[in-house]
Length: 146
Image 1 (cartoon, rainbow, N blue to C red):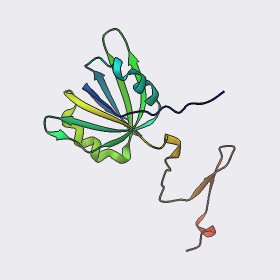
Image 2: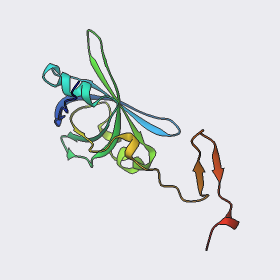
Image 3: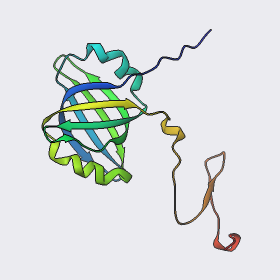
Image 4: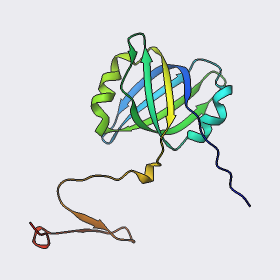
């Protein structure tokens, strides 16, 4: 059995920026595709579940790119919905796109070179280690060298 690597291309698509929803750990962005997405269907399916870079453009021009996980793609007979999760670390960039919510925009979806598993969480504060069985061991300040 051979595995073939399929290169995913950037996708530029017209969408309705349907909504922004915040929960305690992430921002959820939802878009409804306005055009025929059939020419992008294969690329969109390959990107589902992966990290992407989103660039939203409206009449005012492009906003700063946002790193987001492409959570899912839902189709029915009336619309196709794209759902992305954005980590709260990008809160300033997400807040900047708020005025575009509820409008028709151009969305550029670019594949991220790394997967969500490759992104390291940087923590300041109490150092800890996670064991192979999932247990967490907190390193006390007495064990640290100053």
